[in-house]
Image (cartoon, rainbow over all chains, first blue to last red):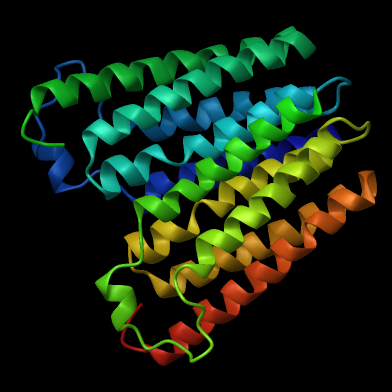
Length: 152
Length: 152
């Protein structure tokens, strides 16, 4: 049962993550003024794949536990928000709106982490790397926003 | 408790649905050869808002019930897929890939409906209008694909 539930949550992660393949960083992104600490492109899919495994494990653990209502609703909310950033940033090329999406995503990930933790502390802990990565992504988006004042 | 969980699921629906506002039907869509039974543009947001209320109610009912693991995982999967179609169709203007996304979404909605039904038949029944609407959207996408062979 655990592995079936895990596989469905992992599929949800990759469904959200497929926007990364559909809207890849192109010429526009390469030409943006980016901070020196910007990770190389290959780091993003590797990191996300690792995070997806943590997120799906956390989801499956809590799905099989009692009293999971708020945690499960929050898991759904954060994955719905997760797939939004890439189409906004790379598709619409809207850096400021990307920052708004990332801020809302960050808040939803933090609240999901707390809700998971209340049911199962291991599940909550599995969301910590995700929250750290979204924080880094937010800092990167903010830096790109400041370094490219002519873009919106 | 029900209303808090309902509100979180509803937020997840509107997060996925926000792609409809971000990638609105533009000049390209107006010029496509569409079947005579194509609904006018205003029908889509009205229908989706109604469906979101049904989907969030179903999610909240099952989140508060026992034995909800598969149903909750499937609810997450379908909402992650739900937000994909609009960026693919209206953003990338890829009609054929849009058909692929809709087919996978249809399957995930059907499986979610069955999983919800096993926990609470009212929740399963609340997904029936959603499945019907995704079927209509699929028929529309297929018809547009056939009527515009030069597009991809």
